[in-house]
Length: 366
Image (spheres, rainbow, N blue to C red):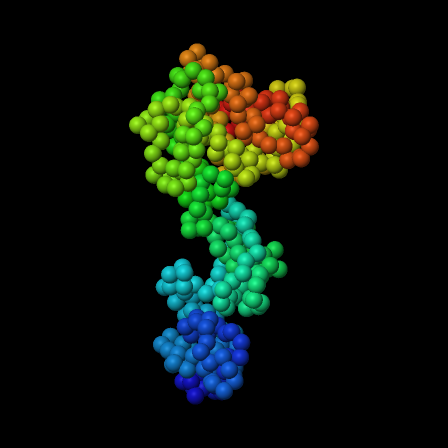
């Protein structure tokens, strides 16, 4: 008899784990007695808690008073203390599930999980429902950004609380903007911050800034440097003397985004503002359109527009007005969601107007 249970009038039954079980004492999901002839643990007859043989008298569990619901609350308190003492990789799927459900009630900066069908090697449990993932191939889905493993049917119920891990986010270019900033815990992508700092330190007076193209092979070198070294990439004048290489790398970053800086969802609203003739109404629609952008996109757009506004202050030297910058950045920051080539072609002039308005009214809109 287990002193923690039997001592309070609750019978203890020795059980064999005929299916994967999570032990209430040590939180171990595995079990060495997976067949009916070996009793690998015991279960209190009064509660659903299951214990290893070696853990049945563990300190902190044996002293609990098992009185219905109060007993379960006391166990939960003891286990919660132990969960806090464990490192993140040691958290069980039950802990992860509790965290996910708790986060559903906390309003915060959201990111959707990037689930892809995955074949797992060895036994795996769903990190949402804690049930076993059966099958030999394609047992479930795995988030490519944070590594969360769940059943395909459970993926529809998981809250949008993806926390990308750097071991899964292996590149900078062609990576979703929100994924990148959450993985690096930054407000904006490092490419944007570093390139703009370099341009403003030595290139604001360069004629044709952003309009003149740099050598494509060197631009690719900058891209690979960011993908390889991240924020440690060297883009100083010692490495790239031509400032047009840095401007080209910045434009390439925005062109390579899987979701444009001005997202597909917000695109129609921005185009609507460009088609409006009344200036006050234009600003009102633009303000509404900015609210449709994800926080990371909006912050990056604000930072970029403030930079381009400073570029226009040197127009006498660099010959780059807000209109000229709109021509360059319109198709770079915006892409039509429709597949119709003619519709996309007709929108080019409106894309230019959108960027031009954002630059001129940067201090009002952001």
